[in-house]
Every structure is written in structure tokens, then in C-alpha cells.
Image: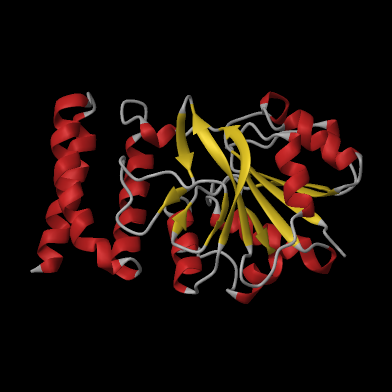
Length: 276
């Protein structure tokens, strides 16, 4: 059995030496257990002796094209020598136990994905049950195989490369935000299952806090949401429209950056005009 793992880590304004992924992934590569792509979207490139390790690829992309381009590059580089891909964000606290689980997991056609349980403090961020509109009250998915719809964030996803090639890779219409929603929606539409690991890992999700988010990033989120509910999850489009109004009110009260709530309000009215 091949079981050759290719890992892709997307970096942004972070030195490799400062990433919490470093000890686990350097050990992984130095033992020859698979290959690694470090795709750096930072304004300036970086150098590190580790980049010369066999099986390690470093690519700097000053255009900051996002996640989908990086993931598709990983699929290309993986070639025929690998049969599985692991997606990682720079802020995920990867455990050696989960890495070993992804390396050995027996992917099949009906269950082409395995995901960890990601937590911020005591809250499970991912994966979540996705039979309806995903919001703050959405229930977490428990360990085991799930045939009902599940949504997970990109980081930590172990995916069969055969499945990814079969769907043409990642949808670059979602360069950053809502790429994960698109991917798991497609899995659900194709009646594919998701394996949820017992393993827990810490993960920082900056978009949870509107006080810290930039206007540029928030515009990216709104664009991803709009495309997803307009073209894919149309059954929840009306619910999302109502949610935008509620979000506008909450942001007006709580968020200091007045432009944030104005952007939400404008998106609400844009959707309303499109509905009419």
C-alpha cells in the first residue's frame, strides 16, 4: 500500500521558525515519511536551512492568491508518488498522533476525507453538523464516520488525492473564504462520508472576532458567503439573508470599526435587490 502523504502549509506574515507546526513537520520530513509544500503568501520571501531538506518545497507568492491556488499546486506537486493530502494553516497545533492517523488511514471511495476536532479554548470550531444553516448554535460533529452533511475548516483535512483529482481540485472561485464550505457541500452532494477523528487540536480562527478583522478580509468573507449561497447552497440563501440583517445589528452595537457593519448592511440590501 502506498500511503504516501503530501502536506501543504500556507504561510502568511509568519516565519517558519515561529510556526507551531515546526517540530512535528520537521521530524516528519527528516524521517522521510512524506513530502511538504510551504506556500508562502507573505509580502517578502524567507529562507531557512529546512527548506533544503529532501521532500520539502518552498514557494513564495507575493500576489497572496489565497488557499485554493496553494492547494492545487500541492495536488500538482504530489504527482503519482502520493495518495493523500493534508491541509494545514500556520496556526494549527498539529499533533504527532493525528499526523500518524492521516498517514495510515484507509481512505476509500465512499469516505475520502478524515478531519480532526479543532478547538478554540473549550469550544469545538470544527467539524460541525451541516444539515441546516451553519451558525453559532450549530452542533459539533462527534468522532466516527458521518454520512449526514458535515462542515469542517480546511486546516487538518486529510483527503484522498484520487478524490481531489476526480473533482478537478479546489475551486479557485473561492480563493480564501468559504472554500471549506464549498468543499464539504460538494462532498455532501455526492453522498460522500467524512471520518471524524478522536484527536483534538487547538486552532486559532481570527474571523471569530470582528474587533480584530481587517476590512479587506471581511470583504473577502462577504464575497465568499454571497457566492456560496447564490450558486451552491441555495436552500439556505433566504436564511443567510436574514442572518446578514441580524449580524448588521450586532456589529452596529459591538464593533468599533463602523465600516464593518456598513459592509454587512450593503450586502444585505444587495441580496434583497437580487431577490426582488
